Length: 390
Length: 232
Image (cartoon, rainbow over all chains, first blue to last red; front, side, top):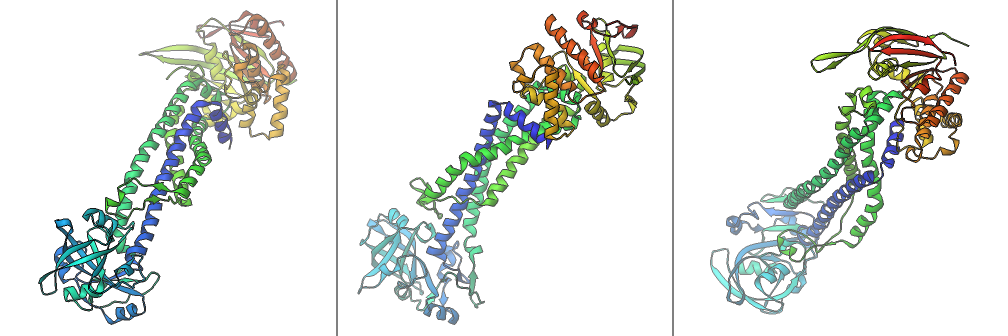
């Protein structure tokens, strides 16, 4: 307790030098918390969007379906199993059929995926009701990324060409009935959504699907022969990898900043020990042991971090709160990145994250304070009293 | 009045390494000090005064011989035990005051009591009493930088005396002071010696200090050349 009391007095007495170190440390701490908060906010927001727009409450994949293997896609479809058919009838599941195709916007050519989905589905947020049939026109919807890539607008008519189940090429004109805006790029890039019945008819795959989206909050994952249940752990795996990579990258940057702040504390400690030799000698003469003085200087250095946490709480809390409330706007063009990213990210700060970051900063500061302070243990008090550099 | 022996120095020799050879600062010193003495070790620079004081103050170890402080042979003491003796029984006054610059006068004087884990109330009472002894009651909130040299040394005396130590070791306490301030602080120390019966040992070559001593030990080249009782 004495060391804390004396260390506090020494620190406050050191004035500007202390406050500069405290500010830099608190800056590192707040930026670390902010960076983690942004990534956490992104993570939560993106997964919410993905559940709402893409994966619902999980999926069943045809056992030959591999989204990363275009060569196997033609074979990755099958009739809906009875269990799923029941769920579909009750509005708890929606099948999706995928086939490869080519679109010809303004005479250009682009390889795409045609995806068929029930226009009356309510399981994902996609505005599929726009695709409802009105006679002979095939109404399709596309995402904003696809619209930008193909320069297609609402009500445009465009030709598509595909192969049916027998391998026969066919072509038709479709009408872009709507363009949806979603943060989820994986339902948008290079994709055209059509009514499921129409696509099944076009491809001669009546009653078949590539995968089935389950309704959210439905707990239903029985083993169905020929179909594999995919939970969030699989469906979010790619996104989790992105977040993990981002965590590492952003943490590295902020840890470099923290290292610079720690270097400042280290320098201060080295300078303190060099400049305060007489004081160290006096402390020992007055009855402190050398290790008590080492402890005092270590506590003094580590207390920079305690003050930094307090300072960070004072100036950082309003900043982090405002950021969480109003969000952080993402720069233009991020929708083309290919992963789920909202126009604005609302950081989410967990108490655990803040505590862990604070503990990391305090522990690291204590270590860099202790290292130069060990020198005191080797000092001769008689030399220290004279202020002789050893 | 208890005039028992408080310090015994036996065949004390101190050598320091100096390049490849050694420098002998003290050569077979034998001395005893009694409780309540007001004595000084005098001699020219390099005669070994400060070295002797450092060994008596348990800040340094003898090469040969021993210093028995309050019945404790210095050679048998661990670093921690030596620190505890300094903490409880010794006060130090330095030529350059060695006040802690970021502390106020009150806090500087309070420091040794913090090490003794005294309660806040006891500390406050003792500090105010010590400041009253040295006539600095009105400066308790000042920082050392705001004080004159004489005032700083009086704070140092208050710091040394606040815990009522058995021994006060003063190394050239007047070297940085003018004549008036020197007499003032010497009178203060003399008064405290008489009132509190504290043993004062000075290391000095200042005639003003010598004029206040009741015992003068002269060191020349690390040996005691004279040990005389003075009239005061």
